[in-house]
Length: 412
Ligand code: B12
Ligand code: SF4
Picture 1 (cartoon, rainbow, N blue to C red):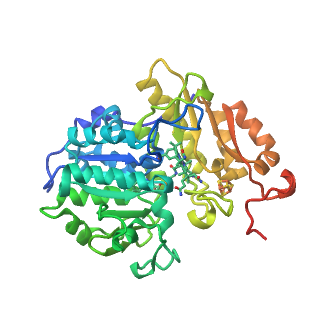
Picture 2: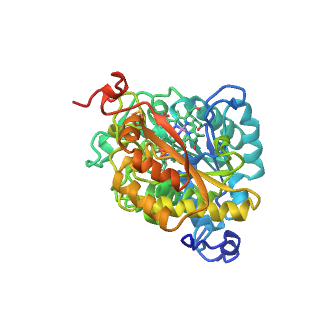
């Protein structure tokens, strides 16, 4: 028998709203992953997904609050069922989709636009922000975050959490605004772990009176969990969190919050969820060129509880696909840079849970070559519990295993 998931149906939770609380304005938010191309649509032959998981990860606490009561988010346009909530999120590929974005901004009468940007998507983020400001002027607060921001606005030393120690790479959007190289399009620029700080910024927005930006700057509590930097380039102000650790066991999962809309062809006709064990936003390796390298993203975190998080997300996937797509079976792709950071203890624990409480799901995940060579037995064991697809990274700690190729060049 599978373990039980205790999810309360969002439709039921949505009907228990409170109208109390001191909310001056309703949050009407849209969240987009900025496009990487000028025109066209993504080729069916490229690795892809229809789900903006990075953005989902960032917005999951706000979306979870929207399903509850007594918060600005509970009064927002995100306080709806999963299917409608999904419609407030756009994963954009090219600028051809800007018209779609404009339609969404108008139909939702949006007053907050969250933009997630990877480096290659940054010019697209600027174009989307321009379109939103041209349409809605100062009525819309634009909040930028995502990988590009994490890598261009950072603390030299994570333990020295003062705004005076914040560094800006020459491609930092905040720096580009201050240097007048790009227009002042982004009201708030957030680097780092955004789950809680996005929720908090929204709450403050809903309580603010005439000038939301000043109100947010004045009241944003740096005790809000997560390692983040919130920069306000137009006001030339920077806030740095105290660095209180996120408790990943307590965070709502992406699958539970946003449901499943993707279906990877490697899993035949099955619906595919994206899972993340949250053992860290990056990789245990430190390859020179890579955005996931340990040096940038930090070390492993909460590894002991990671197999439990993954198991419960596999179960949630089955429950949610049964409910939202009753004619389809379940599959999942585990987005960890390497599955459970390649930890034999954590993978063994996941195997034990799947063996003692099987789940009707097939899944895939990523390993590097040396992990595959050294963990054959564990991978065979995972295969017996549903692993059908391995995405192989051409990396190894022992270059002789792959003819001398070595990307982790700094390692002694
Ligand atoms: C899932 C995934 C995808 C999915 C979903 C993408 C999406 N837009 O949501 C798909 C398959 C569609 C995809 C596509 C691409 N991806 Co991708 N993807 C990933 C992957 C594997 C996991 C992302 C994730 O959820 N991580 C876990 C969360 C917790 O970390 P996070 O993503 O950094 O998010 C946190 C913060 O960055 C922040 N945050 C994120 N978004 C936002 C938004 C706002 C408004 C704020 C305030 C904060 C914020 O809060 C989050 C929670 O703490 C990462 C690798 C990795 N291990 O992270 C690559 C990765 C992010 N992808 C990458 C790239 C290059 C791409 C593509 C450009 C590839 C391509 N040419 O097609 C496209 C871009 C598509 C697009 N328009 O956004 C690079 C980014 C490198 C960089 N410096 O920009 C990465 C790091 C992989 C790599 N090493 O190359 N990707
Ligand atoms: S092993 Fe892969 S994901 Fe990890 S740092 Fe190296 S190239 Fe990046």
